Image 1 (cartoon, rainbow, N blue to C red):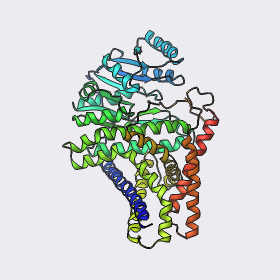
Image 2: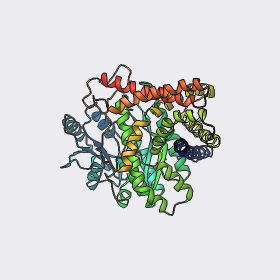
Image 3: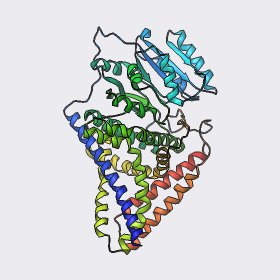
Image 4: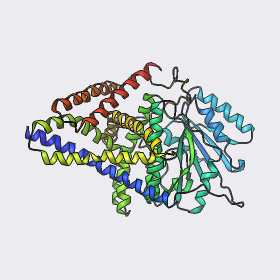
Length: 495
């Protein structure tokens, strides 16, 4: 029993330690962001001089069977405010359904209006999105390449607000904008996604940029210098996050990513739990694959300690889900050890201190939530319930995401599963009949339902032992797994 208890407490404390140090790295980004904002050092929208020589820009739209949103995307990009003779649009179309004909018709419509737009079909869909981008780049006319995924609807002034930044420094390889949200108020799930993404774009990206640390192109709504892509080795399909991979390879070569949070590119958030899961799976597994591929190079580089520290936790951020699953699953055995064993007081006290990591993460999210809001008490009133629900769903997705991370680390290869788009903005709209929605429940969903019951047992044990130290954690876990289980089943039934 001694050795079993030692193993449980060692794993539990070790996982909490990682979460604690990770949260400190996030807290440090809050400090760097607040400092830069206070000193008015964040980049502003550029002023374009009268004699500005507009460079040729190629806009790439990698699409694959996007029946519901592709026309909206093409219309928005074809309306960009940029000289027509300096703008090329490539619809990198890998579709094999009705989307193919929709694109052909829409491309012809804009060609008649004088827009240089083509439907690019490659002979083989190899390498998924990365392969499409690389194929298109080889025939692109532009010195700069802007990229938009199918769910984005860029504003007309997007290029005017991003491309001129390249003139300030020849080492700027990427200009990344902030994502907006077309359907933020559609449901609780879209509100929570917007909450999390806003914190990433306001605090994390600005903090990394202000601190001179590595950051990442977010896969869309950004502009690359073509020579930067070539110098870094081009787009690669050996990870599911080709954007993170190329971002780090470029920065290891000395290129910079310039982040502009005041330029917003609106996009549609996934509204169904199945769509959220497919997106989360790709992001977390791809990040694990990229960390395995590039973290050794980062650690061997001549970068400063601070940049290596932040880069390491940036690349390893998906590992947080492994640590959450470990601490969650072991928290109930720890409850028994706390109350039925007497020899582990010091180690238990240390592990309790590491729980502060969750408090630090709340501070991190508070700084993202309060942006663009006025009135402290009103903001706090909105923040508390949304933060509670965000943590619950975040924890509820942990087993799903932990499996993705584990697969990434062991090298198990899976296809690039795109997130289904619905083109829904109001509560009256839904996804019933959407041909891209996967109408099958993964067996892991059953595990999520059982885990909800497991952590509900933890609630009962808290009252049995009169030990409420882990009660808030178990409330969040039981509710989170229940919500993820419920929404997965309910949304699949309504498809």
